[in-house]
Amino acid sequence: MKALLLLTASGPLLILTSHESVHDQELLEKLKHKGIGKFVAFEVPVPLARERYGGHFQAVESDLHDR
Image: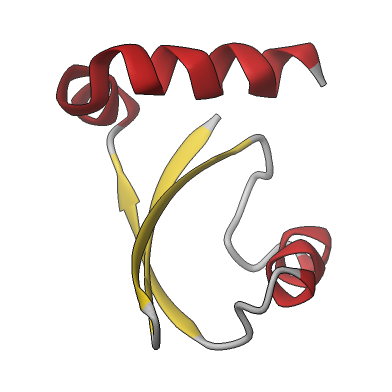
């Protein structure tokens, strides 16, 4: 699992993904489908994201594992 900070034209997003890389074509297609065609990405250490986002992080993480 990776946590990625995406800087987009409409603002920053923090996403969790099971994809190995931000260059993964399937991930890029999913983002494009959601209207995110251009972005700058930075990897965020998962423990830091977990600490900062607490319960919200756990909810998203459990949803990611259920898929």
